[in-house]
Each structure stands twice: as structure tokens, then as C-alpha cells.
Amino acid sequence: MRLFAKIVACLLIVMGVIWILQGVNILPGSFMTGDIRWAWRGACAAAAGILLLVFVIRKRR
Image 1 (cartoon, helix red, strand yellow):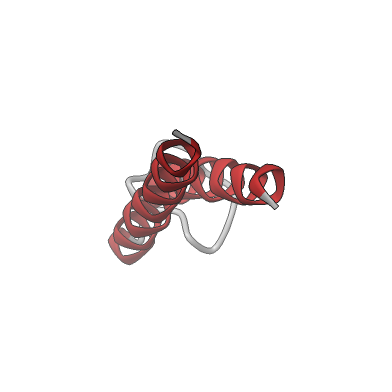
Image 2: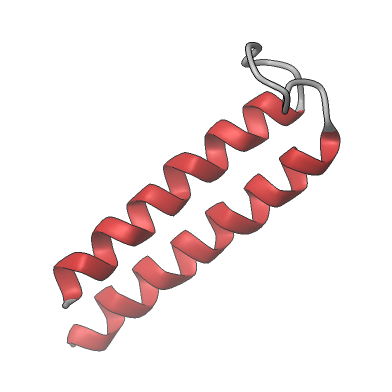
């Protein structure tokens, strides 16, 4: 179960970073490009991934 949670956390972080880059118009090529709302959503997704990863790693100790 921890492995699954780590994979989900990493996917959330990567997806969040991509959304941030598209939202601030650095990574063009989709309907999200240049829409700041996607940058905020990406920041929330990345933060959720980081929190999940920290929780999973700290729970082990």
C-alpha cells in the first residue's frame, strides 16, 4: 500500500508541475496554456502530492 501511495504522490507532483508550467504559459500546447487557474490547480495538486509523500515516508518511522 505504501508503494501505491508513493506512486500516486509522485504522479500528483509531476502533474501539478506540468499544470503550473502550462498555466503560466511556459509549456504551450493545450487548452490550459496561459490560464492562471490551471497554475493554481497545479500548485494545489503538487502540494497534495508532497503532503502525501511526506505522510507516507514519516509514517514508516
